[in-house]
Length: 281
Image (cartoon, rainbow, N blue to C red; front, top):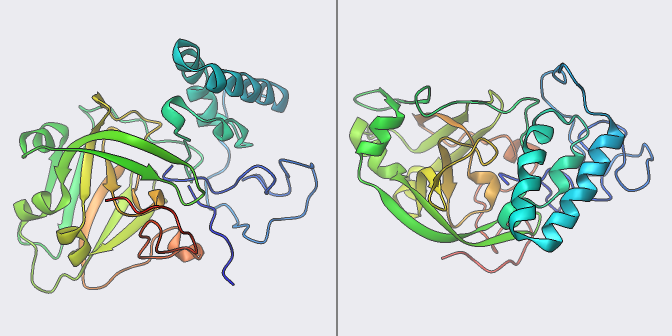
């Protein structure tokens, strides 16, 4: 029987009661035994900050976040503003366990999240294409826009209903550069330098795959993987790569970050990773 999957939004690589991203730290008991699904973190060293957050402060913030989630509304929004910078430098990962606004949970596989403005943002599209190109934010905005309201399902079990997305379909972006006949798959890269994902050309053509720029009417935030991220509607969230930096057309599927750690390549909701969640259509 396969090990129950546990990655990210993009998604959670751990849950309460399992080993945290810090080796040997157990969230529920304080013990040192690793969960059977433990993956050694492949990140750069924990960043140095001027005012490091201690475990007591992080635990206090987690408690505060739980209260905000229960009460909702303006209080949750205020708590999200507090948690956002904590998540970016919290080495324990505890702050990430607090549900954010709308039920989202925020995760990164790297020690630091990319911080790019729309003016700075660049997306490279190359590989087996006729006209390799680098797209800025304005270039993406000038392409035909698509608007979808779809659920987002994490492989760890949580789900956000009716998220409103805006962006450019990946196939539209690829039409602009001319995909060569030898291309059979797409490899996708993140600005964090670690996260990669992959899709087949058929999946890009047939499924709802978006180069997303807006979520619920706002430019996608840093925590959500903005200013531009991928959205693969019918698949679990770990396929929806954050901080999209490069799209490379290749001859064959190259398993991504989580696939190399045992998760399904064809991660359709309810039909993969040993889960029976309701499919997203």
